[in-house]
Image (cartoon, rainbow, N blue to C red; front, side, top):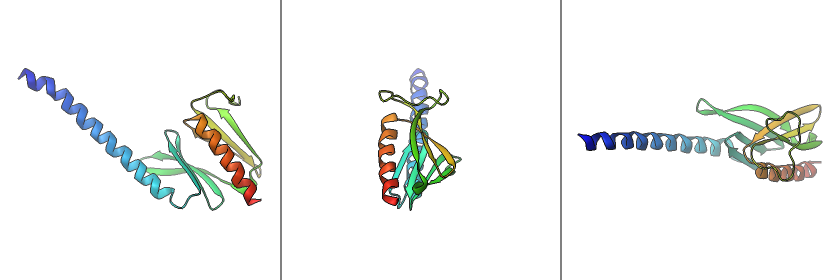
Length: 136
């Protein structure tokens, strides 16, 4: 009886971890379908983003599907800024790491895209600027 009580919580943890793994795999498969044919795409804890046919869009994962939050036409891109996620309008310093947001400005529109990793956001800044220059 005591052995059963010891192993029961481990069984519950195993089932819980298996379910969470299945949900993450499902999210990744949905992302692969959503991002199919994209020039650039990313999936992290903050959401998903893609550049497809000159349109940059980002989505959040809600209720088992990607819900599109906003879109931006890349050829109208005038300025890209890397901003701190929580400290208002403060730009992110070059040595900062962690969560941040990428601000796209152009064509009278401003869009903030959250990123879980500042290094990945910096790479995206460079790639988006290259794509914007190519589209001009």
